[in-house]
Structures are given as C-alpha cells and as structure tokens.
Length: 286
Image (tube, rainbow, N blue to C red):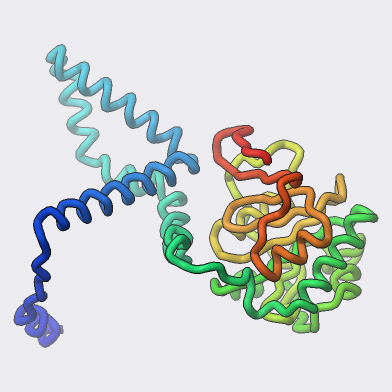
C-alpha cells in the first residue's frame, strides 16, 4: 500500500480557472439542489417526524442558552457528542434507501431523454402481460408481476422457484390460480422470460391507504429499491395497478398497461394516480 501513498502524494489535481462570479453561481446552485433533495427525501420518509423532533431539541437548546440554564446546557452538550452516531443508527434504513435510489439514478432522471420502460421487453410480452392482467381482473384473481430493468433483482429471484419460461398469458394466469403452489408471491420477469415465481418482495413502509393490502405494499417496496415496473391485480376489487419509482398508478385498463410497459406513457387523466407519501393519507389524485 506504500506505493499507492507515494503516487497520491506526488499527484497534484489540475485546477480549472473560471470566473469568480460563475464559480459562485455554480456553488449556490449545487448547494441549493443538494439541500432541496435532502429536504425532499426527509419529507417523503419517516425521517420527517424525527427531523421535527430534532428541531424541537434545537429550540430547547436555544432557549436554555438565552436563559442561561446551565444544567440543561451541560446535558444537551454531552448528548450532542454522540449525536452523529445516533443519527446514523436512527436513520439507517432511510440512508440506505437514499443511497439505493442515488445508485439507480433516480435523482438524475431529468438529464436523460425519454426511454422505454424496459428495452428488453418485447411488444408480444407486454401484450401477454396486459392480457393476463385483464383476464385475472375479470375474475378477481390476485397477481403480482415484477419486470426487471437495469437494476438486477437476482437476490429476489433466489427467494422464489426458478421457471425460465417464455412469457405467455396462459402461463401467468395459471401461475396465479388460487390454491396452486406458485400463486403466493410474485412472478419475476427478466428480459423476455419468466425467471421465477413465488418470489418474496420487500414491503414499503409508506402509508398507502387502508384499502390497499400487502400485495400493493410489496409492489411499491420493490419499485422503491429498484427501477422495476410492477403490475398488480387486486384480489378484492379486481383493479389493475402499476407501481414504478415509488408511485402507484391505479384503476388501469388493458391498453394503458400495455402502453406503460412499452413506451413509459402515463395513464390518461381520468385514471387515478396515487403518489405515495409517508404522511398518512397524503395522496395526490388526478
């Protein structure tokens, strides 16, 4: 490792000279964007409640400082010494989720042009999925179909039963038929193949409404930690939904499902769009 230190010690980074006014503008824009994203992340996670509690502690500290309450100041100063470690421990799930979202490029999606939801998913496969969803919707057969994209879902595939079969509507319908060995869990599609069935998905901890059950929570959960697209058929209502990037598009029909899978088009205005937030019953509908 000594030779690496020698190389680094002799390396001097090249400094690009730019006008001072331009450097100030870039500095302000990058800092503002970073603060905005951090606040947005806090607002949409359980960290918002903890953040409000932290603000209360700061206000108490400020009041104690103004009033010169020595004992309270001493206790709070001692507590602040371990504050950074406590923040890491308390916010560990949220920090992990933020890094996962950053790693899959969710925060920088506006730099990209319009892309297909899944370049590996052919139109025939999208047709088969949409047709199967419609058929299961009519008889209220619950279904959960995860379509892998750029983020690998190998760990989730390992939780299920390998299939490696061509995507057909008949196979999907038969897989989710009640009282069959594979109906409990999710079907995971990789490329143009059904990779596995009966897969276990991570549940979201956002508040999505009491009318939505575990199947929808699992769909949103996997869409939060990856760029996958998930098709859900409700067993209670027969409604078809799609989860993508932490958003849940509800009450879709066959054509909308097909178009979203192929061209990443949002459903029509008359469809209900539920944007998930951690605050209870905080929904945006169109």
